[in-house]
Image (spheres, rainbow, N blue to C red):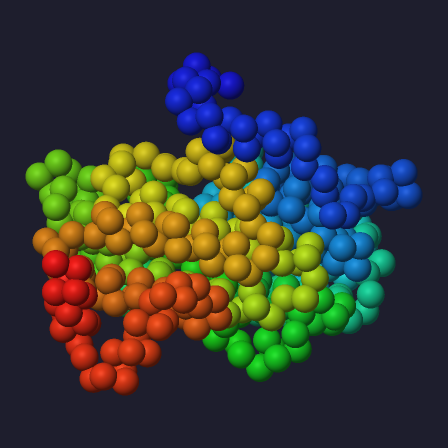
Length: 417
């Protein structure tokens, strides 16, 4: 751990306590029985740790009916993404691979070593035969779901890889932005929800509300796209929609310039507004989860997203580096998530931070306030704020006498004087 990290934790004892609590006293709801796993399945979980240690930990705490299926689903989509993301692979090789990746899942022994040497998850594709072997052992209903999502996502990625305008100038309209996020994140939510319902861990009514499922993916993806501005710019990738940033600046790469600070902050707040518009539907979705391990799996990324959104909102550091919530804060969130009420409380906490940072100088000040109010209103509709008995009685008397609050206050003042 860096000296700066140690000093930060010493200045934030609650976060230090959360890290210790999570590391030492956290008891997972479910644990893998590694002794009963095949060598190839153990290798798959090793790849899962290598691709995303934090996400891997949450997957491995899922109920036994879902743990392996979700782990392999994640690795399959990560393999697909590793091909799509690698700019060293010629389009003539990349496109057919993306479009046929669902068929590759049936090809025993398939391997791919065509990624560039610096590609982070290159080895996953080199040993992809391990994923294929374990995929064949999944329940048939799970294989059907995963293949369907893989086919849709692969074709969507191939369409974008073929889109010269997108590759050169990035995302154009907000509608294009929503479609891109649907292909890379909304489809994942679709597949996961179908797996949850198939195993009886979620309300089947969720499948009748695809907009809720889509919002879960879009809220996460859009928040990450805001956070990753600098990293993507350095890689010559543009995901912020031109329809938004051209309202504030002439050239996308000039957002980080000091002389453009106010315009850049207004731009980032509009991007955050676009993401916030999915927040209430995310909470609505979570109300349909029946199993505690699945609730944790779905809710933890959402609270991380709202915390990240509060961090990046009108934060000029986004244009200079990749900003992330501290590890201690992440541990606090994982501990606090337990049910829908506590999740709503976390959303309220970070929405207050956004509200406090919102400024009348911002052209979207009112829109942001209204959107925050909409989410607050949704939370209030399912978890009303308790009202003191005296306040209830006072309101009843005002209704009976026809007094306004101001008149009632003046009468009380006269009685006390």
